[in-house]
Length: 415
Image (tube, rainbow, N blue to C red):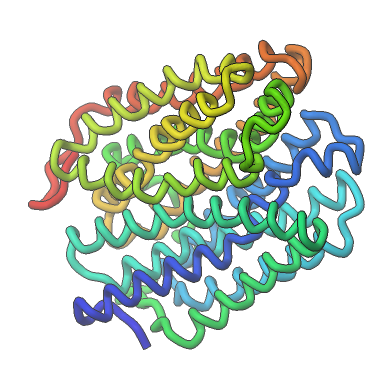
């Protein structure tokens, strides 16, 4: 069984957890990849599409405070395994039982709950088993960056399987990924560490000590601004590319919208890891101010790009895919590094609650603005919708500066 007792075991543990995360996330963007199909099949408007996209992260936000905070009291691996199994069942349920708006809402809600018990719980398990702040920071960077890989692979697999076998098989394949990830963690990952001090149940979800920890809270709120932007992008990128492609000359580009979106999302891995390395070298606050500020500026203008030559559209979204994810690992590393070790689970739970609550609302707001300004056939409507992402992420650097200079960290870390 793998743990962090040696450098070799720690490396293998990170690799196994990252692999399991990607497999377990095959269902993550399946609905988003097939938005245009379901919009026609079930006669959904953009606001309803936003709700189905957002409820996934809403389920996550509702469940994560208890599931992640509970790891301060119980074995994180057990919670992870139950949650991964739930994800497999939710994907199967969508494939065979979702017949419209309400059925889709139901199964995406439970898929989000599953993510709550695997993504951040998996991160807690990983940081429990790996020791040393520098080593933990890099483990966090690689693990959180694989969220982007999971999303990109999910979009790609969903699109390719749909073309070959139909949309139901996209969800069936996603469920197989979850069950395989469950097996990998069961067989190869050690149990999580139980705390030496027994924490009463009522203290598990007591977030007051976390809220009074201003350095950690600053990163948590900035993380919420980050996910407001990122999850709206992941929910709506394929639909925007379909619109942009409709404005291009026939046969102007061979890649499908899902393949292009996969490329954009996969950039999150190197962007997040490199961003974290830059934050270690130059300082977290400086890195986050530059990256989030630049991403906001792009968001305010990118919706107007739809009618540009498609190669330019892809280039612009390539840059946006980098800017929207380069801050991810730095934000999470900042939360972990500034948390009270006895309340690390609760701190990460509040981070997830704030972040994914914001991320569950932004696709809904995006869709509502899209409808309000003329619908998905209007360039102005897309520009207005993307501007909501720019406004959200712009709050990140403002929050970081509002909370002031954070406490000094140990060597190898940065503010």
